[in-house]
Picture 1: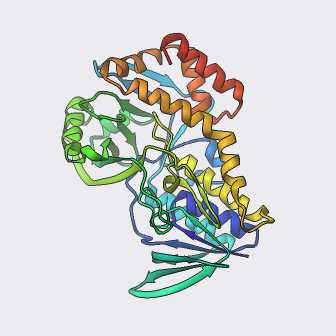
Picture 2: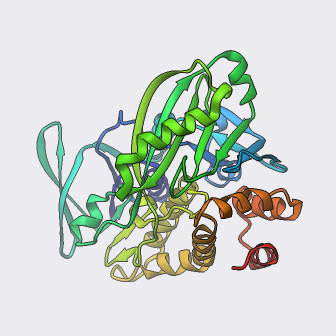
Length: 376
């Protein structure tokens, strides 16, 4: 058996490693091995044990989360029983690809061009200016929001948001404030569809915000407003680099197309409200690989989609509903921050987000808590 994985981010790298560890010949194609993916880079601590990832790639362990409302009311939520890991994507992604290579995957730096579906799947890709061909029994598309694999099989790109972020240098005193703390800032002036964030890395801060893709021209204005509101926390900063990247806002209706499976951002697997994507990218890559490994009928890989829906569909649907409610206007954003002063909601949120509690009991309890304070 042979498998082609297009996209060398977390979804593709975990898929390739999982397949290679099972002795399956795997080709991992990444268009640019030096590319820096614009991303906040926050990963729940539970992921490192679950996916056997070395903690050496972690730059900071966050144990406190700050949330700031449109009216500048602020709360701090302690993370008990875990932490939020801060990584730089250029380091994290390279590490995951190296692990896939160590397991036996063949890493190719090449640009996916098109595909042909027959008894096997044939693709064309460009490597160092030369067009080459490759074929395999299955293909995993893990090449991001603007997936070329999805386009090649006739799928439309999902609704998207556009995020902008800056890596900035601040004083040692300002960095010390964010030593074990990250922040989420809410308000329509900062972000029309999500929030502004401050994520500390080893020697700098990553700050950013996002807007609906159709409102992308206003994105730099939102970032400037956000920096104004941060005020003394980043006063005197200097910009290292500015980056922008799209993200999906809806899950793909189908993740399985014959012998082709979509994972991560290519399948729209970013959690509403939190916009968390790295964990779900890795999980989907692992699940897609496992489905290929156990498939007795090469034409039926629907178990991947069925398993994903069984574990996560209700969570994504509920978070989408919360997103529709709390991002309606600044009054509701104010409410979102305010209700997280309640210890029971903090505990439930951390169980779902940080510890990835998959029990139906926890999701039901979470829903009941929100229904107590907000009409769902």
